[in-house]
Structures are given as structure tokens and as C-alpha cells.
Amino acid sequence: MKHGKKYQEAAKLVDRSVQYDTVEAIALVKKTATAKFDETVEVHIRTGCDGRHAEQQIRGAVVLPNGTGKKVRVLVFAKGDKVNEAEAAGADHVGGEELIPKIQNEGWLDFDVVVATPDMMGVVGRLGKVLGPKGLMPNPKAGTVTMDVAKAISDIKAGKIEYRLDKANIIHVPVGKTSFEESKLQENFDALMEAIVKAKPSALKGQYLRSITLATTMGPGVKVNVAKY
Image 1 (tube, helix red, strand yellow):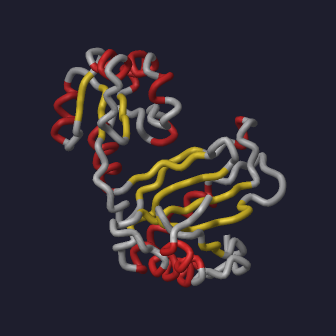
Image 2 (cartoon, one colour):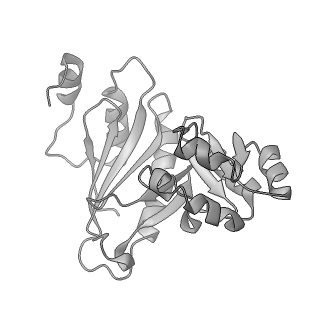
Image 3 (tube, rainbow, N blue to C red):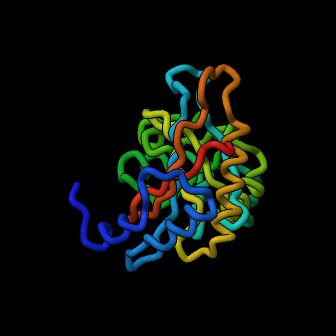
């Protein structure tokens, strides 16, 4: 992959053979952000898990103390009183059965997170082929299948992010924007790492966290020292 001049200049600031301490890594990531827009700061965590085994799967959610810097659009599947509760809590879209053809046939996907009450999962299940591959299926572990839709919505809007292993057993999550102060990125990063460390599967033998890399949307990766975790 050929990188532009700005990327190459930014990459010179990073020593690829070094695992930086978090404070230095965050400062470097901010320094290497060169895009004209407010880039997202992402964390990529390579684990020693084998996600093919259910007992080594990692999936959960954590509320970042300073949010993600992104406006999150929430779709709620609910019925009865829960519709009003979801609307009052600030859901962007609320509905039921009638949304199925809109999503399935018209490709409507104007939302970032889907929340559902347990009694609606039969309906939502029919969207598995559309929502599943995009990581949008509601899941009890992530707190997105719940009767307490108001709490789910407020957590998501406040900066709740979901983490899970991809096919290569890596976790990719945003921890803020490059416009954030370093201390706020640090707080978000610490909250994420605390959750990831707690999520270590008991069945795992060997090293849990193989590498941690911080990067902006368009910038080079900065390796973080894994030793303290």
C-alpha cells in the first residue's frame, strides 16, 4: 500500500521497534494526525485467544468516561410502553415489525447501534443476515438486549462502545478523537484496558495480550507497552 507524503512524514516520528508507554503513545498519535478532519483514535489489541472456541470468545461493552466524540444513532426495536420510553430517552428511531422490509429490502441502515427488548428478538432475528456481518445484532452481553431501554440508550449516547474479537482474534475499538485532550484520551484508554483485562477468558493458556497499537484513522500505528497489562 502506497502512502502519501504526509503519512510518510508522520511515520518518521514513530520508532517501530519501540513499545511506548501510554502517555508517550497518546502524545505521538496526536502529533501524527495529519488529516484535515478530526480523526478517530483507535486501539487495536492482538490477543492470544482462539475465537473459534466459545470459551475463548471475548465480547462486552464499556462506557468511555469522555465519550467517543461521535454522535451515535440508536435504533430501538420495542413495543407497547417501551416505545414511549425509548423515544423519551432519545432514541433516533423506534419501531418493530414494520422496519424489517425497510432494512431487508431497501437497505436502510441509518443507525450505528441497535437495541431490542427481549420480546422483540424473534423479529430482530430475521435480520440476522443483514445486521450480523455488520456487527449490529443486539446482544445481551453488550447490554443491547434489555428491558431497560432508557439506560441502554443513555449509556450508548454517553460513549458506550462494544468490543469483540474479529476473525483474526484482534479487538478494534475507538477511544476518542484527535481533538481530545491527552488526559481525556488516557482516561478512555484506561477504562477500555481495565474492561479488556477483566474479560480475559479463564480457559486461555499462554499470553493473553500479544500487542496493543494506537493509531488515528489515517496515521501510522504506535505500539504500546503490553507489560503493564
